Image (tube, rainbow, N blue to C red; front, top):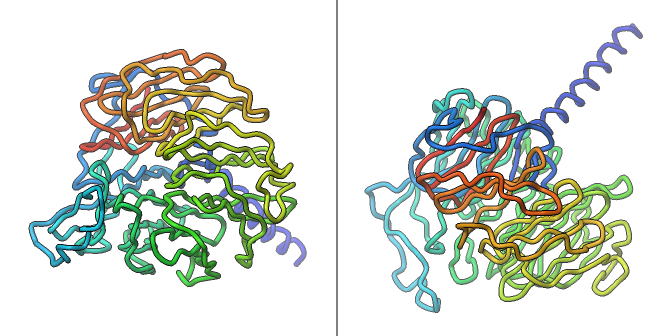
Length: 436
C-alpha cells in the first residue's frame, strides 16, 4: 500500500515538474515564459526572408495585432474578420473626441485560430463572437490586439469588449465572460492582454469609466475576487510575482502602480510615478520590479519589491529611476542582466544595467526604423525588432551591433515569438515561421 501511495505521489510530483518545464519551453502568454520578452532557450535564425530559412508562411484572415502564442506543436492567433453585413451604431458616439478614431459599420467575426507549428496548416478556426465593434480604434490599431494565453490544457482568448473565452484544444468553448463595453481614452482601442498564473487568470479593466482588476478561476470562469480601482485608461498587462513565499499581482497605470494580494485582492502597496496612457507591462527578475511608461513624458523605475510597503513613492524601495527616452507602446526587454527599451514609438534603443540603472548605451538609432509598435524579443543573446518591411537582429550586450537586417514585404505590430529554433512573426498579411 505504501508503495502504491509512493508511486502516485511520485507521478503527481513529476507531472507538476513536467508542466513547469513545458511552460518555460514555450511561449504561453504575452511576453514569453517569464514575462521579460526573452526566450529561456532556443536558437532562432539570424538571417531569414522569403527565400531564406522560411519554414512556412500562411495568410491570416481579417486583421489583428495580437502576438501569437505557442504550446508544443500548436500556434494560436486571434483575429477580427469583417463581414459584408452592416450593423447599427450611434453616429454621434465619437463626436467629442478631438482625434477622430477609426470606426466600422460592418459586423466582425472574432476568431481563434489553431495552426500546426510543423507545417503552418490550420487545424481549426473558431468564431467566438459575431458583432459590430462599437468602440473606435487608433488608425494603426485593430479589434484583435490582446494576446491570448494558455496553460497547455485550455486556451484563453480575450477580445476586450467582446469578452474572455476559454476554449479547449479541440476548439470547444468551455466558458465565456462579458465585462461590458470599454471606453478607452481618445477611442484608441483595446489591447491589454490577460495574465495567467496557476488556476487564475487576471484581467485589467482600466478605461474612462469604472475600473476593476478581475481574478478569475480558470476552471469555472467565475470571479475569485474583483478589486475596484481609482484609475483611468491603461493598456498594461498585470504580472504575478512571488515575494517571501507569497504571490502578488502587480499592475501599472497612470494614477498608481499597485500590488494586490493574489488570494484576496487586498492592496499591499502602491506608488505614483508613471505617465498617462501606460502601456508597458511590469517586468520582474531577481527581486527587482521594473515599471515604465512614455506618453508625453518619460518614466522608468526599479523597485526592490521586498521593501515595498504602503506608499512607496519616494521611499527606499525605489532603487533607481531613469526619466528619458522610455517606451510608449513597445514593452521592455530584460535579458542577461540588461534592460533594453525603445524611445516612445521609434527606432532609438537604450540599454541599462538592470541592477544599477547605469547606462550601457543610450539613444542608438536603428537603421531603417522610424515608427514601430511591436516589442523587442530576446533569444540566444540576440535582440529581434520587427517594424515596417523589416526585422532587425542585434547582438545583445554592451554595443548595439546589427547582425542582420531582414527585409520582408509586410508590416509588423505583433511582437516576435521564439520557441526552440523557430522564430514566429505575425504580420499584417501573413504569419511566418523561420527556422534553420
